[in-house]
Image (cartoon, rainbow, N blue to C red; front, side, top):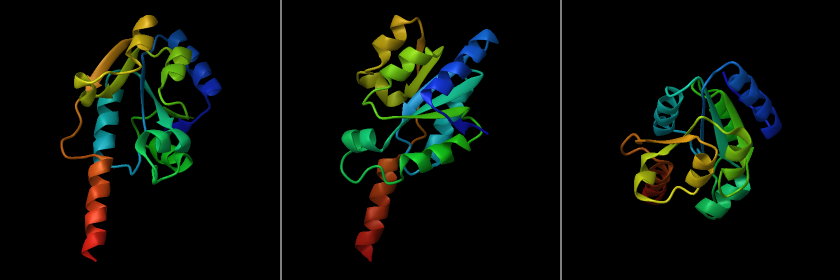
Length: 160
């Protein structure tokens, strides 16, 4: 089972992984209303290496990036849920709009994002390429997203 850690703790763990010759995978996102699509994505990411660090957008950055009313679940609760998942080694909460600061500090071997970035700009790509890391895009499980789940809940509420 993983753990919720600070960036300083993540840097120490990263050094140990590097010394042990292990591959660090990193991904980031909001992971609001945890669902099977999230688990599928995290399992695929973890399969690429020895450890998976997850940068979790904090409440402030989630609201800025996703809009008013988001996140639905507070960051500290999302971190606890995510760190309990088998594929996740560690969760680091951050409040920046991009994961550049975490990527620069940790320099993971592989940076993973969803396949939707195949057709749009991935803001962190230059940071990863600058230190020699690799970017991998993973397809999402079709028809599984937090937005879709929220829409379904809203429709149910309107029916009442």
